[in-house]
Length: 451
Image (tube, helix red, strand yellow):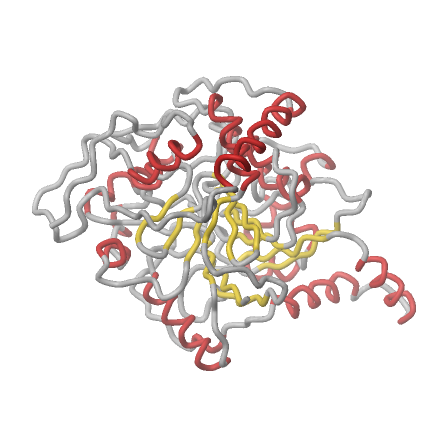
């Protein structure tokens, strides 16, 4: 199975899909799945600009609304996480995950799904220490402050992810794990982005939450975006490797990304065939660069490589945004993945969601979280419930194609003002499936009928 990974989308779906179609033609391959690492921008109408954190001069409709209405259909099954430039009002409707349009699935604020035999986890948003311990308190109407804090990662969502015990093939995040630059060619990175230097030196580049998850979950692959540059690394998870936040005295100041608002959407794609589609080559190059100054014999390298083959590792790759001559796409082959090409719920994640739902807080002060040993007992109990009540039913774990528009799309209604959030039918269906309380806009308005 061939999986395409894209960095920051910035509502350039048509350009991304055209690039993939070009790659298929040139390389004579078939792409089975597209993963997008944030800044997706599900803009349905001009009212959505009020819940999108970008300067006014960058507010353009883009093409997503055409997929939302069905005028266009995504040619590839597409899975994405949220970044720091998202339509919060829409993604919040689908906090647990769901279809934003036909064939494009939002993983949720945190989540795990299965596709084609791959187990894919991820987390939306970016880290900010000031809001990390709060509940999800933001609601309509968003202020200049809350439209930004709403995309900040919360401890509750990270806590849920740390309860995962079964291996993950892929993990998606928008910002990078703190300290990931220690495992790749940092000198090459600094030639491209020299202003990263002070933040790397002081441990401020990236997310402490992602750092914790990297060393806790140890996925085979980790894909990120956010910083608008391609960077690869390999993290070997042996007994000597600890998370950066454990090995360094960390500053709690979050990093600012000087490049994150520089999103010129007027440029057109060109030369998509120049995209490098071999992650293995990138990873090997990083290893060579790291060792280039060491005096080692060929035998030393052979012994070292054999030892490394026995150590679990995570291959990390960050990608750029969708612009000409930028490394924003990568194709990776997963020959061992031969399952059905459809999205399905993950048993363990359903159990985690069911066991932790009572701690989902919608006020500023978050409810205290129980210790791991206590919540793990609850998860084991809920896992048995999931297996008996969902997994054993025919197609019980298959995610239903139950997309339904809520807000009107651009051009469908002359005047539309979003004063009350929508209660999304997909979220209603999901909470009924798990027999848990729906806390996401339970008093919201029903979807507006689309003519």
